[in-house]
Image (cartoon, rainbow, N blue to C red; front, side):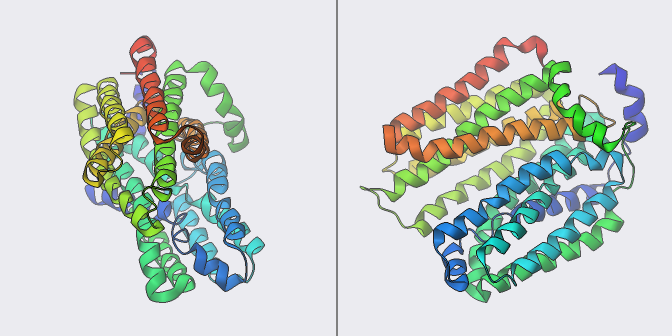
Length: 399
């Protein structure tokens, strides 16, 4: 990493603590905007005179848009002022959310949700800025704080969305999120850093360079592969869990199944601890400990689903382990080019998200085909594969 030392010194203007915490809050809000309509899907369908399945397809445009945002929007924070880029994204989020509250049919809702999904990638942009401007000795710590916001947003989006929809209706709920994004957009203009990254080539050239990054950087290949594997396992277990709990002999309601997501709070706490620990002992050790914890928890969940307390505890350990591994893993990606880390983060997150999408599709299907215990064992095997890659490819790692 010595080849980047000059650039890092020039660009790593220390971030004030208040700015870091604002970035974490902003990352939470931006990430959450993809999720608030999910608990209210039946109300949306009734309001639009459509089926739940059709509204479900419209909501699926959010993840598709998110992938587009990862590829097209995240690299902008290295070429232009993060203050302007991210404020603009929050402004577009506010407008799109307000428009979604006024739509009268499902196709238009799907289009607007796609825009919201693209701009919700603002969390990845904020983590890229954190990786570039944090001091090298505190990079993982700062990243952990911002990532904690992203983790909280995934959880809070569904919880706050469901509660506000009950209080204000789904249209009123979305307008609350729109107002919050408008406020953050204005605050971003004064709080977020304005320093541009060290990118010398044009925006289109940056986009064209993303595939080549994997060919030139072994640490990026390693980080992306193991990250995609464990995110596959993460999404497979959670989607499979919902399918298993909704079927006999459990036959839980959607509301009761949703409460299991509260176990994800452990992941929010783990990201902060993992960031500080990574700065002290290195990413590889944190990744391995996190994967070991998650793998062990997945095995236990596979055979104790009838015990709610054990299941919730294991889910908390599972989330904590994988969220810790993610912070450590992503810190190695952002360290590859400290002067302009966003394109590396964009490339990494695209592969990471593909792994998660495949895991989501696999989980529920696997429970139907093989049963819950086998699905949990497969999840453990995938996480074990990520750990094996980390151990055997040590020479390719950054830390």
